Image (cartoon, rainbow, N blue to C red; front, side, top):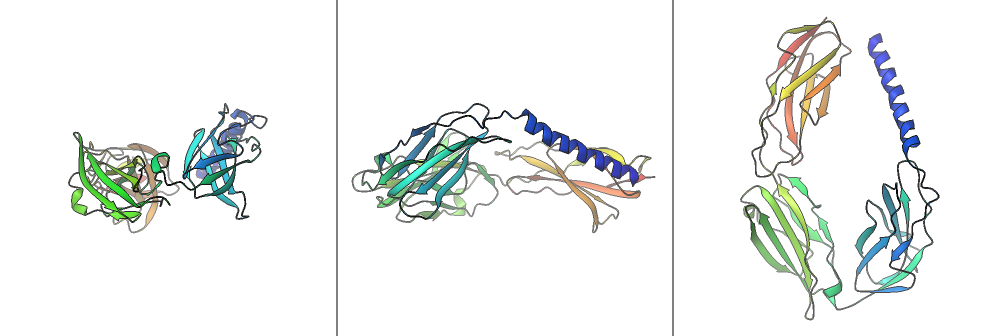
Length: 320
């Protein structure tokens, strides 16, 4: 037990040192300046699509974009941390002000002086775009009961929705025109696990937007149960720090979702009471125990799509 406490104390000290190192290693950007490129002071945006752009700051990790209504005192309408130097946003008609600052782990620049602009209603959809809401882009899931949603455009009379399967080429699996801003397709269209591209455009009598699109990855392939490696059955140890390894089968599905291993330790073979559960993205780990005696362990594989393998066999070892 004393050894474990010493190891824990050393770990905490190392963590504190690492955090302090991050502060030291981060470049101080607090004297740098972000410059607005678009929209500029007094610009009028016809339609709904505003493309915010600003200057690059070296050593910045991201940028804090804030937009507020410039007339009504309703606070921020957008507060977003953006990894790039631009962001396209759809806004309703009105008067707005925006500002940006650069950020890294330890420092921030000042916000530049708020820049005012206006968004004006337009029947012309050609310069506008549909903002997709859910599901999020590049979602991996085993759920085929998906509801696709997007934001309304004031000038739109209806919307064209398309769902395409990207597997050995691109196949359109469903198309529909709707006046709604959401749609749920029949589960049967997801015949195969694959990347599915969903896209929406707005239409009126005079014009239409281009398609806005996202991908969703359908993965219903259950991972194989892993095979335990070391320690071997009935291995005995005089140390409380033990190395573990196991093997994971190949992912042979059409979609390879990221996988992780879930390791469970227990003092009982039925695993009703767990010592601990550890999740790693590799097929090995090292664990320090605080107890002695017989310990059982097993592993399963989960993927980000929500699939879980069966558990491996159960193996036990002894810590003296």
